[in-house]
Image 1 (tube, one colour):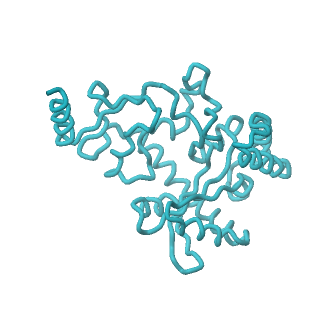
Image 2 (cartoon, one colour):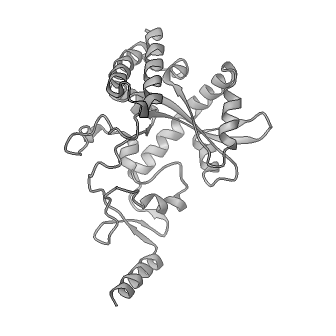
Image 3 (tube, one colour):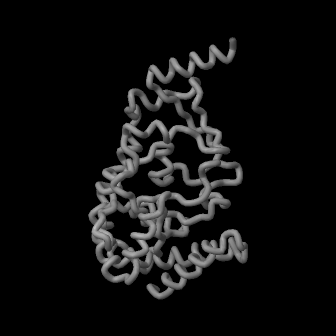
Length: 266
């Protein structure tokens, strides 16, 4: 009888087309890579080890249209076009917490935390009608999706859009800069277009990761020297943190490489 009652309740909620969600501040989502707006990358260059992530999205994938709008479009060697999400990221291994996460599991920079953290669990690179899937907690996360939590989505509409719209508007505002950066970088980097095509052809997709040194020359109104100085220290700290751990050797290699690139800028 109890099972049948629970099934009826689930059906009722689905029919109502409402979704509940509340963050419990468990800190479980504060691990690994964190996408950032350029403004947040600049603001936190003395805290996060930063890279630039390129993620191709094929035309048959759901996020293609919005990625082309917020990111850029690239024509591959075979004349196919793909949308490419280009974003600054805090490049942290999935086994390590965000450098702003306190030992008690709380955010130490709550008042100035990045837009990505404020918008969670919604994601601006997903069409509004598909946002319900973002409310499903990943394994290990302790998000509250019970009826006791506030209703955050109704009839596929986000009810409180302030943080979501703020992040998406930042991404739209920086899109022209990143398109110019993508065009210049593809023209100046032999083999990058081929690598992008290889990643785009994989059944499950993938991404390419470049250093921030590739972006800085195309980023107006930024003090590249100051940025490089702050980043060089962070990259050095993270290189020491991961040490010779074979499970995160790729991260260690990039920290050292990007640190040298920051040194050349200085």
